[in-house]
Length: 472
Image (cartoon, rainbow, N blue to C red; front, side, top):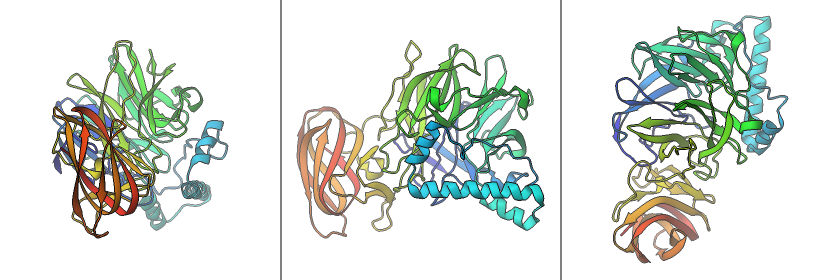
């Protein structure tokens, strides 16, 4: 699948590729390795799809690069289990995270851990039949991966919903990846890094991160040399999603950051050694507000043609799932710090110009109950729906050399929409007519030329849904 776009979300709307690890590869292309949200009730799925680009504008979503069915140890209860974190005896910070979970998510997590524990105990006493093993395979999911090039081959590091981790190999950066080997560790969110001297490192973990030197074969390590607590929730606000980069002589550990109460941020810590110690530095981006159910973030930073970018995701559909790949430009300052950036609608492109249609699904921040969902009625791919009184939708940014004079909405329902540019009220548009018919509504606005954040505030909403907005 090939696609041209610089706006957020980056990929066609049917592709949900979160947890993006972006790497420039020897062929000069950028490759993004992530999970693949394809299920209605949970994160991820049973396959990976690699994304690539030559110019940060033309994107290719490749065929499945790796599937659950490729993992040979799944369904075998006799395989040694390496536990991740101790959910039954949570730390103070972990308990805070658990308490903040929606009740349905919390209940599902408890049941999943109970089922996993029962499966392990059963495996200690009896061997399951091959049919039962097949059922286990069908239940397991592929969580966030990472990938690296070394000596002519590409190594995909993956993890499973049963907390097993491993590596598969390919001669191509987009896969398919084969010959999976299990690692002697348990957890989620692996990351891989090769230093300037050729030494490779492997990282993983949730709440507490672990790191180790990989052997030259890239598919093994000595479990007795693992360094624990490289970054932690208590000292670095670390939740999960390890990612390692090096800028100059400084190592940057990027991860899902809980500093603001839930892991919607990508934070970073820096150090002078790839296995630490690391010092917490702050937040790069926060996706809180992309959806009223926003819960986590996971991504990376990468330099392309001299420009640094942050790769992250946003959830949609009023859920914590259906997470989309998004990208923003970032700046690495002379002192090594990274300024926090906002989520935008324009993404890595220029601000929206006069007369350029901004789709409802390109809203970068939502306040209230509204969310982005599939449009099954009016011929649009997706729309902003479930709009209630007082809800707000933010689009960043619009820019004009001439004064702004008019707004056009493509929408349904009835109500009043107030228009704000950089927080200053620029106009109002009354939406009337048949509630369930789509219409184009125009109204005058008044604002000087320049670059602005556009915010729409919905009032007296009756079944309103927004497909697109255009400024003139």
